[in-house]
Length: 113
Length: 115
Image (cartoon, rainbow over all chains, first blue to last red):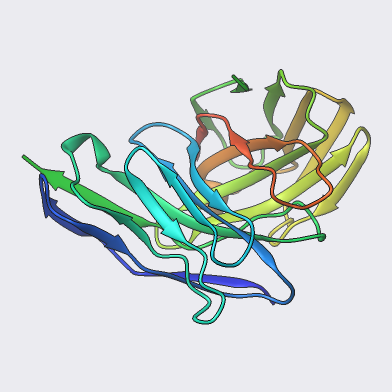
């Protein structure tokens, strides 16, 4: 079945450091790919998405590119802030399939001043 | 902005009780979902609904049921609560599109403790 694998955390960085969180997927067909973020004490929020190969999703300085050849959707940010401390989830849905999301297990990011 | 509201942020119940978790969305979304979130396991889908009175089992439906009598409301029911159902429960909703790329919008979660 469909699955998402993301790098295990926790990840600890200093402010202004470069961030990469790896995400790879296994899916039949052509999935849409998402990154969600969960700040402490809150539900999940959509951070960015990409719906076809080579699409780049971006939001709040975060970027991820849909790479079909490597089945990857790695999250990157050039300069993290303390306010980026959160848990990040990679997820997919199958295009034309059900509306269900398949989530990775999440990566906790802590950014220190 | 879409608002998904879960009735309680924290809830404490006893083993064997029947527990109701309520979720309401205000954007006329067709789809609604219930997940549980546990450390090291991520989010797991319990049930979802794509229309009023329609429901489908997710990955871990055992011990749970759901009700969707109105489009905006989706209830999760623990028929006889057990300690292994202590968890964070998240509700979400989404609109239906031609392609399955509509994002899900989440509530803030209910942290349920079963004693």
